[in-house]
Length: 275
Image (tube, rainbow, N blue to C red; front, side, top):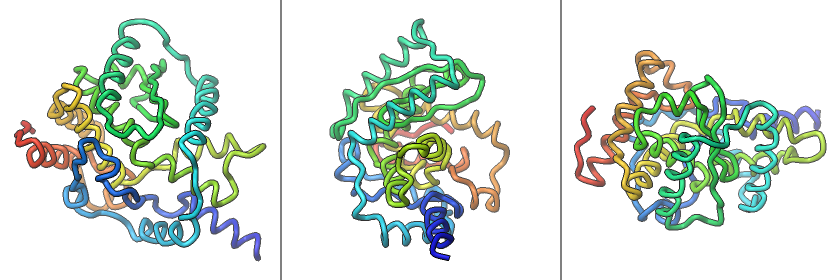
């Protein structure tokens, strides 16, 4: 019975419940570019499940003392890249690679509090529309690059991925693994890696990264409003919004992301984006 309870506890920590995770733990004023506060709950209608609330309670009961350093996080990112190389072909030269590196450098130069992260970006040959991050390393598929119609759109996506690192979202996942005794040990790394890369961050965290990503993009000279047509095209792929499916979704629906981004840019920068 003790073993069963321990396994159940680990499952709860690692996202076995509906994984709409609670928002960042660090006050925005300590982490956000230019100390801009983000009102993301109202624009996604507060659609956070009871499962997310239970996860928060469990995490706060057991894991607040568990720490994962930035070095540990970046070491994990290095190991994750070695695993990624087994699955994807890395494109290392060419105009798209140069473009990604230039945009990353521009964005990183505007991070006021980088917290020790060393960011890098990689292009993967894949027809899957995706971008993700782990330990300061950011990955774009060729399909994602082709989907974006401007450097501004790429900058908004890249700013989003940078923000997952700055806001501690990946760190929190690793702390959960550490607390459940599944943090990378012999025979556990592949499982941990797969879970970290596939367990959703949750609607609040995704929305928060959208907005901080816009702040970074604008600070670096890119047009934040260009995120609007990007997510409008994403909405065409996702189908129409409905309350039931959105309630159980790990990400805000693209239509909600458009509303959230437009509201943030209007209230923070006095700019009305065309929707």
